[in-house]
Image (cartoon, rainbow, N blue to C red; front, side, top):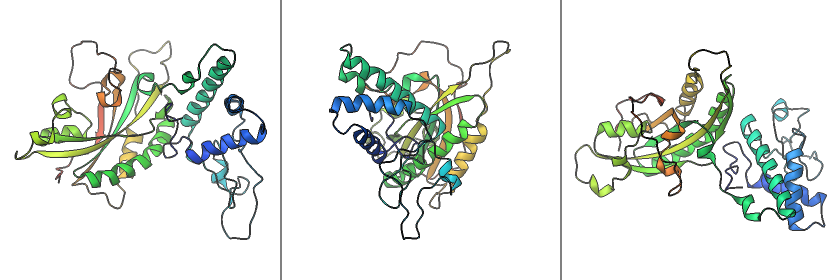
Length: 328
């Protein structure tokens, strides 16, 4: 499921354990089926599964230890699980507690798409390769949120970027609560870059996710020995936004206020006990699909831009605080 970008427990999709449990359940139901038949039944059954009915390989057992066992009748938090897939060994736990309303909808659509393709394969009108086609995430939405985590050191950025990634799901859930947002679709991985900046102006732009062609293609040797030059390490995460259409009788452009969820998110990640405002940055901004950077696309995949008169960054707005950072 990696090619379809729905394999990531931390971002609200299913992880390896959950996918394995689903396949195991289908194998239990059809113990003598061929691999092709298992794949066919997998997509059909998962698309039609009546969530939040849990997927169980065996009945949940109570044991002698004083440990918590998944029980939606007893625990309100367990009742909130949208797609419960329960581990079979004692103590049984939900392997999918991170699933959100948006990610559940996305996976259900993929189950339906898989079921349709497999049916075509069995009647000879499609090939198995179609089932493993690459995702269209960066072509699917008109608007995206770009979350940029930045730091002045590579090792520091690995820790900081991982911390921000672990919180992106919280931002997704906050966005789902916004009236006009029908879906907040997180991409399953971040994009790392080491950007070599000549001055403070370039550093501030990079921290905001605004990377010029000059900075993007600059090499480390190009800044060696230059006063004020620094290397900034960044990781960018993306959330696709499906926006509700404006009513037919509405007048003027639609306004979408996402300042509250983005500000709350930046406050939350800054509460990390190792956060250092002098050497780390966090910025959330919304961008149009035409403004997506080249590094999220494979070579030759990015749509060509339509030449147009540019105005001063009216298509993207950032939510960040830019102190006088000392990048080291």
